[in-house]
Length: 226
Length: 169
Image 1: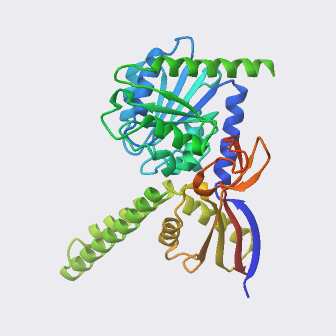
Image 2 (image 1 turned 135 degrees about the horizontal axis):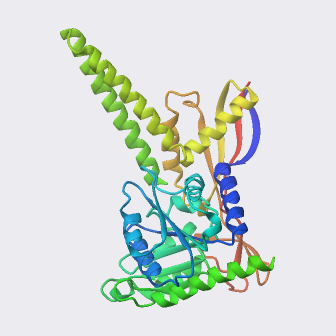
């Protein structure tokens, strides 16, 4: 007769433990950390290129870009500014995990970073399960995708703090409806903040970059008080 | 999740194919009495490389489950595990069929080959922050049925837990 053994153990407890260690390191060093997620082709790398070009030079930025096979994304971002950039080639894995982040953060001087950007692998399913110690998940969606995407991937949209709608200049060229995507997203996550950008025309980039800078400053101020 | 499972399937499938082809060549070489040693070395190198590849991708959900259970087997000195009961929150976007498929693929020819993976989906429940109403979130609509607020905190639905295992000493 088999015996029943109660475990109540989180499957990803190892990742969660590593992530909470990372979070501690980030907090101790007042680093604001974002985990940027989207489907493939929504424009993560383009948005980061634009962001780094506009970001005030006083902010010290470090970035890791996850790619399944190449270092192309990291190379593109390197060309965009003087940011410290490290590629992570996952070699087939569809998400970044806390161990990969730990490994790459060890190559940076954490006392010399204000903003740490994690560009996750293009995928809205697996990355939602893996905590990377970030302050916020930011989900990017573009107007060339379906406006029902939040309903298809509720986990990711529920866990994100901000939704950036990219390729806003292409609005009207597809069936994508702005109001619908916002309603769908707010149905999943009522407190989701929404911004609109176009990396091609530059529309909305200032709003996004200003918001990002505010968050970095907020984290600095919060930590100095405590 | 399904992408990951597909990846696993490809590796397992692909690996077996190449292994068989190499074994066939080896057999022919042995019959023809030529180059057998070269093919044999090639076979050894290939299987080594593949095993190393597998280690690199152990961080999928399925292999995390296997890893956790193997640790328990070691810790508790169990002879066999007949069942693993999982609690999977509906908001994890995990497809049970894909997870079962991945579990089967990676436990083939191991001590967990005949272990049943039982997946129980935990429905999403929410608590309204305005009126404290407790309710089940149907079809991911996070809106309070009592006061229509969308300021909802989640009380369950994000689980990815091994609830229990059934084992023999």
